[in-house]
Length: 166
Image 1 (cartoon, rainbow, N blue to C red):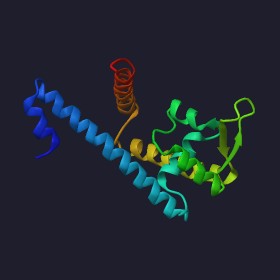
Image 2: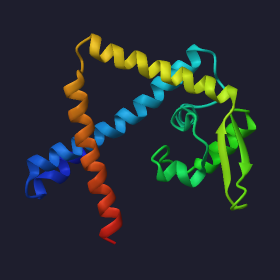
Image 3: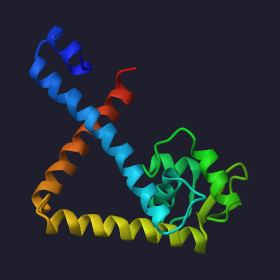
């Protein structure tokens, strides 16, 4: 019996609850699948020393120079181990880091040439995906807009729950 089947019958609006739990499960699976797709692409191009989470972090930083705190506040990175991944990426030469002139406790990071190469690998992968989704009729502009709008609404709702319920 799935979580949806075990929880939903005890709740009012069980039809919506089943759909909500299915959507949550799908978001979770899609995130794991995205990491697998990135990992496969890294292996295809012969990059074995970094993982998919680190590659996605490099992609999200792009040409920006940021602090670890900004990575979370700007939505670039949601993981709890951001400091670990930043440290590893610096050690492996994918990122530069330096202490902030104003706040010496803060460290700013930016991509090295090696890091920009990985960012480009991930960007090319995503561009191929976008083309493939459209070319094969999987998703068009209207579909992607609807998905994005709906996910932003859920994100805003969850953010409000964190900020205002406790």
